[in-house]
Length: 280
Image 1 (cartoon, rainbow, N blue to C red):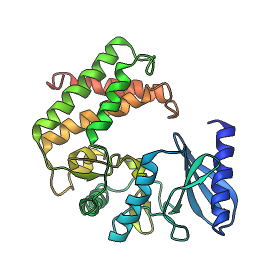
Image 2: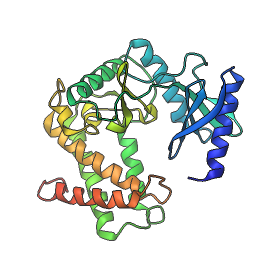
Image 3: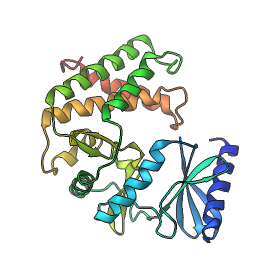
């Protein structure tokens, strides 16, 4: 993480908070990847700082605002500030309610499944222009096809990812399953246990597709408590998601800590999963 990039993010976030009368004398960096997430104190507000002009940032704020009105389990924009993207020093800043995690343990599978079901119920009633999940698959396929953007991928691994992305996307389309708005990445890192119960965060990946695509991001035990899904479609979605997240780790611009090591481990999982499965 670049110190200059962090300083700019902190300065932008504190300036936006101060412009709304919120005291922000200290900033704690909670996450730094494509966006930087900060906890501002003493006003105790969560600030997310992104490069300018990212459409998903505006979509995320609007979606979270609407979902909060339905009572869906999401972290919402802070009510002390207008729910919108605030621009400062060439950066986009959004301000969110900070929810302290009540435990570092993962959310139990039954609670996870209930929260995901409630989220999907809330999303089902919202009409918002979003990408389709296949748009994200296309992004992954473009990365795999471009050695300049993924220079560390070997030839066999590149073929494995390309074949899996192509074949699983085709297999999912053949199911012709009902589609709706989805979180896009409701994995355990985007679900926090709070005093209000489990809450989903990071709605920037919202997309449209079958609910099995979202369920594929959750631990396998969550499906045992989910009310309805197609097992074969879920299997294909899990394979697709594994191929996608593996691809992101080989992007030369990926900022995931120790990304290549994680990417190599996921490639091993992908080889095992595809052997004899008929998915390639």
